[in-house]
Image (cartoon, rainbow, N blue to C red; front, top):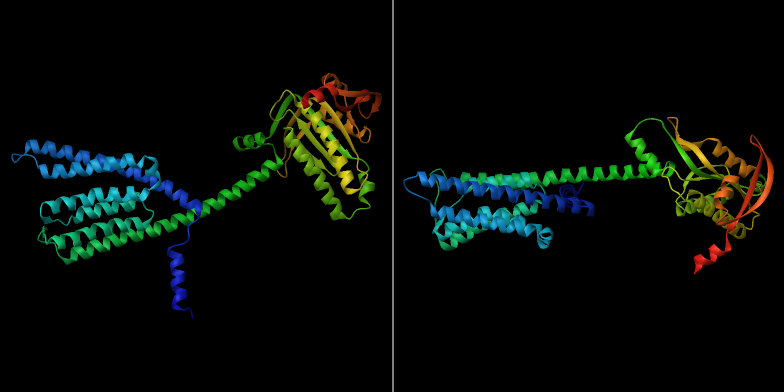
Length: 430
């Protein structure tokens, strides 16, 4: 059996759940926008009523009701002042002041005016209209609704009783109407409470959905370039684009098969993860696009999906940094790690094909030649084609390796990238 304290705790947490910080920010913005809308409606309504009274007064033989016009004009001026306060820095922060001020500008000013006339005027129909409008337009923070009602009733009962004023009402005014009014207020407050509870549940559900969507988005961005992801969102079709000139880099750990025999499987995976994570960082640093890893091979490209002029220079810097990184890993792990790196530049076709487990990939002779530069390369060296040499020779030191036989390509003149020219390195340090 649950104790009374347990039941009360469960009911309290059910009706008044602890609000998250994100929801409180959303609720604040929601109430601020709705308050602005409510003030505009109230000001427009009062101006309309005043104009109608002025027109009717001209047609009425008894003339204008100046007491009502003064009271209505006072309420209108208060609402206008609250509107400008609401748009100020303080008003954006203290929404409760604007809320209560707007409610009492309509209900309480009328009561104060009646008090000054020496009567107690229970404006039940105006009150219910205001309370219902508040609950409809601003269905959050039920405590503010309750405070607006409580302030009005406190003034009516306490001030009028203290002043011993005579109640002005229709002949049908009796305790039943008071019961109806309190019941109506309770319904308004309860509806706001339940609405906000439902709104909070929906907000939290949307937040969870957005978080899951963000996770999916991030996962997709880890697989595909951002530009390709955006294109897939807009166009549900096979993506294939031609790029006139990009630079492709292939890298491979030398003797990986023999090396893996002496390392436990989990240790091997850990080592590869450390190496390729460092390469991922370098790709991001140089603004390049990682394409894929296959076993111990790493492929990266420059100049797509967003074109850039210096794609080959960025690839060259990436290759030099990769060699420096693998040297550090060799020192750290006490393993004879070496890499072969191949680079080529030229046109490619890039895109996404298939419907499952798709990746962004490259096709074309440029890609095949870059792969051959790596597989026919020298351990610990960066081998490049003649087009790469022609582009980089003014800024980088390259060694002519001469002609070699390349599978599927015949004999090719190739070069080894050694580093940036010394004078350029020294000038960059100044």
